[in-house]
Structures are given as C-alpha cells and as structure tokens.
Length: 363
Image (cartoon, rainbow, N blue to C red):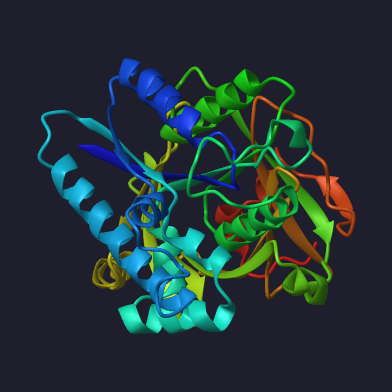
C-alpha cells in the first residue's frame, strides 16, 4: 500500500482552496484515494480560539501544532484501513507553517514543550508544494474577502510568503509554484509537480547537475532562504540488479533516515522509504566495504521559484556540486553568487556512487 502525505502551503490568497478541488479531481482519476487534512488555523480562529485571545502567540501556536499533528495521525490511521493500494493525504498547511508566525525563541520553546524537533517535523511529510501569494507580482488579485481568518495587507502577505518559503527550505522535496498571468496555468503546474513527485510516467522530469566553484559558505548560511543539512550516505552490498543506499539527513543533532533502492534499469523508478534509526543501524551491517561513506553538507537554496541543492564535500576545497530537479522546464536561473565551472549532468564521475568508489577525488 502506497500512502503519500504532502503539504499544500503558501502565502495568503495563493489559491489553496482552488487547489484542493483540483487535486481531488485529478488524482482520483489516477486511482488515488485522496484525503484532505483541513487547515487548523482557520478551524481554530473561526471557532473563537485566536492568537490575540490566548495568553501569547506561542501558547496559541502550541495548541495549533498539537491539534495539527493529532489530525494528521488520525488521517494516516484511517488511510491504512482503506481498501485501496494508493492513498494521497493532502495537508492544508503543515507543521512548519507555524514557524513563519513566531519568533525563533518562541518556536523552539514550543518544540521543547511538545517534545519535538524541527528536522522530524519538516521531513515527516513526503513533499511540500508552496503556492506563491497573489500579493507577489499579482496584487490586483489579492483579497481578504474570501477568508474571514485572513487579515494581512499586500505588504504583510508578501513578507509572510517569504517566511513560509524559508520555514520549509531544507525539505528534500520542496517545490515553489509561482504566479502566472493565467491562474489556470498555476493550478496546472501544481498538478504536474505533484504527479511528477508521485512518479506519473507521462510527466517528464529531469535533474541538472553543475560543477561549481567552492561557494561562499558565510553568504549561504546568512540567507533566510537557505538551510544547511548534514548528510551521510552509505551504499549497501548489491545484488547486481539494484543499487541500495542509506541516508542519514538532518542537523543540530536531529536526524531522519531513508532507504533508497534504485534499479540498474534506468527505465524503472527509484523507491525511497523512511526508516527508523534502529532499522538504519541494523542495515549499516550490510554496507558495501568497497565503497566509502559519502559525507557532505547540503545547502538547500530557494531562489525565486527554483530549489537548488548545493553539496559541499570535505575532500574538495575548491569546488562543489549543485543540482536542480526540473519538470517540463529547461530554463535554469543560476543564483548570482554561484559560479558554474561546467554542467556535469551526464558525467557519472560526478555522481555520489562513483565518488564513493574513489574516496577522495581531486580532479
């Protein structure tokens, strides 16, 4: 049974309400049972539980996050009982949305009170799709009239949209759906991105990889739309038909764990699943001793509507690798502080599986 849980987020008046009906229609046709977890903030505020009536914003957000996670748990439990092989759980906003409405001190106080950590909260969703607010570049369509819980001005909505993107930056599958002149095109792009994530064969996706000069780490770490993620990648013994790898991913002492199985037959899709720490440690016993662990710092950078991953390796002092996944759009806008040496999309010597076989590579 395949259960995928995704987040639809975005600034005020971004089109989330329209998106839900479109997602229901399109993915039901593809054979998914589509479940929607409603937006918790709207439920609470219209029910009389508001940030300005609670003791503090942090206390309100604590209640909101607690309810959000409980609702998601119920939907997941229900999904596992369904007589179907494909379930798509769509969350109208996710746990990290709270971060955009709080000071950092309040946010981490809330996590401590609930016994949670940011990495697990962010990465327990399979994918995140951010719809850009109509207040950005399309202000004439921005309105607060269709949601009684919405009070932001155009300027406030724009700033909030930026904070939401920043909150989710670092997720392994974040997509930013920009405004289009035609709202229908925006909805079509969202559906295509979700379908591509789910592995729809009719959606063409491509990964572009670049060898770049060693980036300015101080600049990257100062950017609100950039998040450093520590990654340890381990390859397991192969049966000749598949390539299996483990990945530990996170930072600040908090990590999540994944297992990926990639068929040698390029026409078949890679299968990645979340595993527990105990499962990860047990599987490490099957590590391929002919390959070294790959350790790297990954800087996830949101640049406009594009999401770059910059991998900095300890054995390279003058260069790094940058990649971006594209769906039907071959136009890549390179961040202006990044210096590209060459595109290496089709060069296997710049892939992790090869780097693991040579250990330290200097040329």
